Image 1: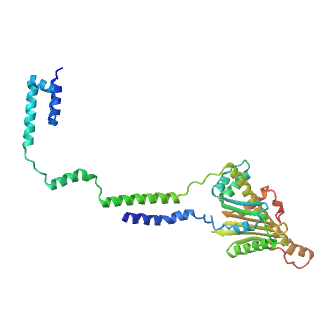
Image 2 (image 1 turned 60 degrees about the vertical axis):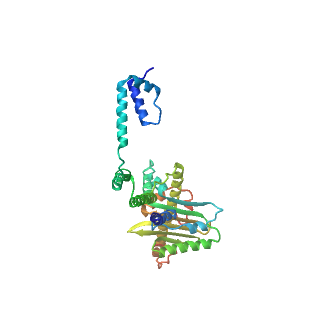
Image 3 (image 1 turned 180 degrees about the vertical axis):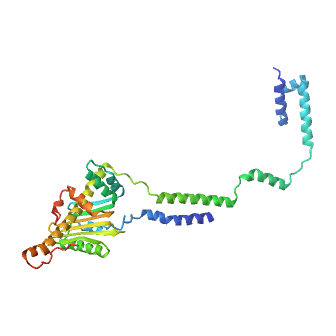
Length: 166
Length: 186
């Protein structure tokens, strides 16, 4: 089966890119019968030969540096920038840690049983405190009765109190 | 190397924050009194009631809503407190040692600026109630009760905003078993 011009030209380009390879037989057969493709091959070989014949001109170092700076060099970080970035990371980490440490976290909510027990305990403490305060009131009344009222009723001098209150 | 030095310096600066976090919590207010000496005095082999209520538990008590309006008053009272600590138990060793500790504590608090609401001393019982005031408001209350006959010791400390009149009213209403045994109370 003979090649079409399109297939033959693809193979011609591939063969020119790899000049060491032998030209495939079917391409040679197509070229023998197709003047247009043969003309294209001649033109491509002429241009290639002319380019290879041009003298090699080395690029000046300044140009190479400029190209480097504008391409690869743009992505390169200066040592100062690296230090600044590292310092920023450390400061951010420390701030986050410090805030986490000093921020009061919500206390763990007590269970219903804990609240019930705490309620009983708290009421007991309040009860004892109230009883102590009541004892103070009673003692104060006793003191007044013993030291002031009773002697006055009996017509005696005031007795010294046996209980002290303030 | 500068980076390492900077990181080390930063860790030193951050260090005290971490250490502070690990320390025991400071007293919640100036009305707080350490109960550990009384805790050491009570007999472990007998019944002991130790109460340590602070923070979330007290907040939960303050949020409790009952059907009775008196419950609401009690919740309000709890809401203004920062801590409730108490030790109730039978002292070990001679009663005279416990009585001496109660007297010493009473005197120590008095010397530290606490005001005595009452101090009742009979042949067998010692009752002392002291309050601590800050900014014209009572922010601490200590109740010390010791009965040398049955060697029962009560230490109670309330820290926070305290309305003594309201506290007495609410406490009187509470039907807590055993309170009739408090010496001097009727």
